[in-house]
Image (cartoon, rainbow, N blue to C red; front, side, top):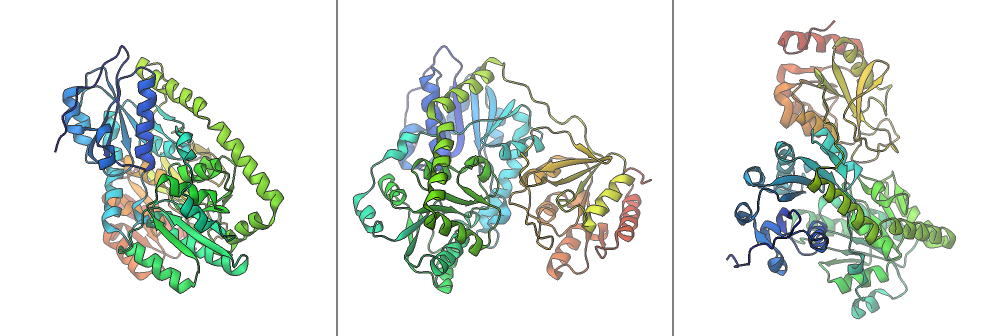
Length: 545
């Protein structure tokens, strides 16, 4: 039932309102939206939160989205928060005022496949919405360079990184005495905080903890604080895995209060994250703020969030990560260094400094003085998707991509960025011995072992989906190629090795039909000629020379 509320108050400054599909209590997006509203009102802006749905605890802080068009004026700025499927795009397009995207990132659908089909579909739809929102906004903010890179790849104008404004005071809640006494029993507590969903890889947290418990610290306990659907596919998998691994002293607490969360951090020996995708990662910083050393798999924006503090690892091998936990446990000097570096990282994100950066960013939007950033002005005639082109330049797919680029004028290679290089907000490609190459940050670290599969890249995949050019997938069995095929198969060609998994090869063939070349990886020239023949027969691509 709609609750009658007074109209939004007006001030002398432009109103800055916010919209999101659901205002939830306690999640990172909801907390950020509420905190931003407080800042905006403090600075003199009228500011309301609009949503289609909300938790009961938030009912006095939100207004129905259907009321926005009636309540807002043409001078208002609407911050559109995007992190999941919203179904709001048509209404946002018709709403009055100026629109600015605030991108929290969208978890790749592939990380939910096999466990939560509906969530995977919603994540895929959210990326469709990301592209659909582009014509309706005049600027876009992201909370990390990792996320901003995807916005640039999608063709958004005026992309900038906005510091994540955290209300550190909310972390100062006194610990729940009962839970603190229960956990403070002399055991080494390894903590993870967050929703127990497939993308967070709590199963890998379990594997690392089991190795740690068996190899280094028998008197240890794993504490997982956050939503867990025990009867769901992933919840059942976690409980079954715990039994198979034989891990002891594993506590799934489910949702916890602020006081209980404080008790978890107060008794934690280390914080462990094996998540495969984070657009930012607030719990990592919360652990740092509370003086708990962090060990985290360096996926997506995790290294950027950690800012050189804590221990970010390129490996997801349980024994290797467990060794890091053991070193922190046994080397008091290193532990102190890590905690001190984390304190310095938190000092960089002081509330006053971050709030001022946010104020300047929003003031620039309202006044029209924000820096203008270009959108890519040159379109490739052909998109050559070769993730390993730079990081594994000697592999057959990379050599084939180079040979193909040399024969197709205007072609561009899309490849993974080497580890350690910052995400780029420049849309133009670079030249690699005459070949135009655009690099994209991988969603996970690239394994140094040449025989391992290359990770996907949300930014690379978004760039291909945003392009209208024909696409050649080299090779068609990579993670990115498999993600792209359902979206670009009508304008795609591909190369696949005959030794690929039968089911995978059949799936690729179903999408590409006669536009798939099946050839041994080492036969680069044979594959090149077969591709050129197939491309020329369509009449779609420029004539190969």
